[in-house]
Length: 447
Ligand SMILES: *Cc1c(COP(=O)(O)O)cnc(C)c1O
Image (cartoon, rainbow, N blue to C red; front, side, top):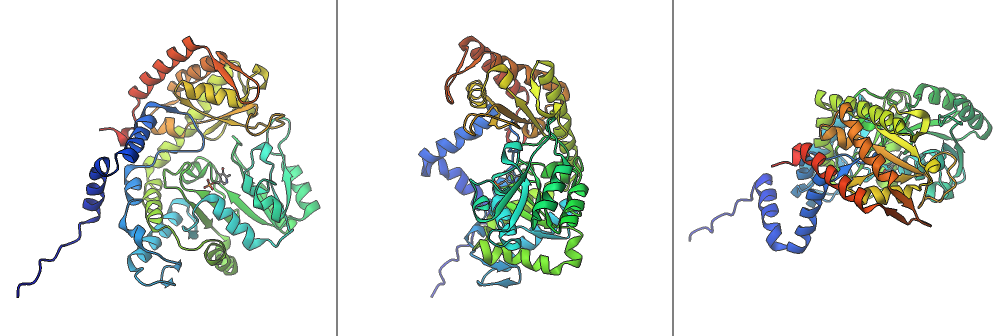
């Protein structure tokens, strides 16, 4: 009898390529949407602070058949069979996370930075314990104690704010820490354009008997690239998202530095905090994509990109201020520029939508002392991650600022979140945005 021919499995790259090639025919409806998004990203001036572009190799890892593996636990200590290759992938991701951030411990399983923060806080705190973080209105994140998050409902949130100049007042942080004795002090922000002093935060945490959690979700690329001081050896624990500035997939990381050597109890607690306490199975292809992105993050080209991101933001802040806009804190040390539009009779919601209608993306954001609700806001948050990735330099920021300012000048805020833009300005700016995007295509996505 003749043996039936064996059908060899395709290689991972053949598998991905074949499926990607077939998708337009197998699911034209969905494919058209996905394809439109690629074009949209290339043709839109994304001046947002909360995103970056993933290298196509990172996107490809997310499509790996490794995704079919179900696993709980950690490499070498799983609750499921068949994890040999996944174990190696996860160990590689851990090694690369440690290398990229000069950390001594890394957990690459959190599905997001919110999940990472919840895992850490629920591990370190008991219900009702005080936790001290930056006020949401001053640029903090929901998971740092807002009543809108489970963190604010389950623990006792105490918030520090910013002074009249928009800067964190470390004396206020210390006063609150000594008065309320939080078990966790959080240093990190979603809308704070200035350098954070992690040594000062750690000194306060030590004096108050608190753990210091540094959340670098927004500035992880600047930290890895050496542009912003690193919290790794100051904080007990550091968390981050992997997609905001690292060009990675959706996901989060938990990192530890110096303290991991003397605090094996904390290391074990962080392992348990993610699995089994707050997550089930990991996302294997997502972990592979993190490993890929972190390899790129550790390279000199990434440090050069981080420097360009910060230089672009400084130039953008200058150009916007030169156009008569109020830049919160008067400038930036990071990738982020925060405008207070209240003096122009504009709302953040009107500005965001008016810009979007002209092909420019920047998001509404509350500013310190904001009197408008979160859906409306008085502020606009801009960022230079993607501009720098597209190759725009500080010299190009005048042009970007000019486009933004012309739209804002031609915008009227209507009641609530409504807006109106002068149609002539919209047509002119849209055409110039198209030209600019064509001159600076997303090179990694170009043909
Ligand atoms: C965006 C952000 C998060 C949440 O990140 P996700 O990965 O989207 O959950 C947490 N902390 C800070 C400071 C952030 O800016």
